[in-house]
Image (cartoon, rainbow, N blue to C red):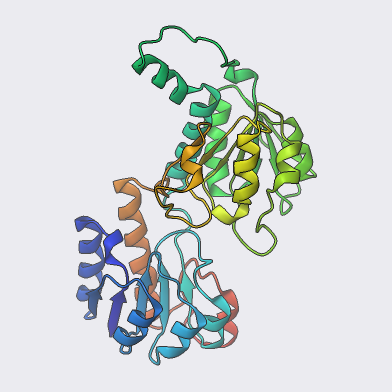
Length: 328
């Protein structure tokens, strides 16, 4: 059997070794590529039994063009770059690894929020310029008196809740899929507006789908406190970027911390880089060496299960079981 790893530029030496050794031990061949377009995948992966991919979209066109394809492994949590309907119609399981970096992403989100609320970038610049003390124009409040709002309460948000609780902060949660949260210091809200109006920090931890696309726009930003900050480590398109930049420029909210943004990666001339109360990191929240090793160990195991005719964990298109027969 033949496996193609589409975009090896995301692999380090250790994670590439994990992929190579796992498949070769099973008697399979794996090739690593630097592909970035649909055309390259279609031309080069005609013999693919499985495709492992980080960032290149697996569109209907690509999926229908690969005659032998049996498995798609999305190296990460999100799977909006894979056409699940096309894969399901062809009986191709698509897997992700939703739990490999919950701690890393939660940590990054929390740190972005704290940097904004403590005005650390501004104070660093003040120190480098020879300033001393807090100066004028920056007001910092005691963090344990702040309210932390979560939009979505999955693995990452639950990991973050431990950090919030450790800081003595109260947490509000909006998650329409939950009926209750039995956890000290956390209150489940019935509406998004309730969280927006009452939180000092808003953290987005929900998936991108048609229902969450641009769920945060100017109307929602205007519901936030004037000194509140918003953090997004999920998917860029959950926030309307133009509305966010306008809200930051006009002082409608206090700041934003983004590890994801529409149109990423951003060119150097992007207007987001010119906004002082916006912290942007280039989609690195998931990264630690330990997380990457965990990701590739789990995803190769899932691929080997499917290629050997067995169902596996974390199939994100479960309807595929209606069109394909495997061992339980």
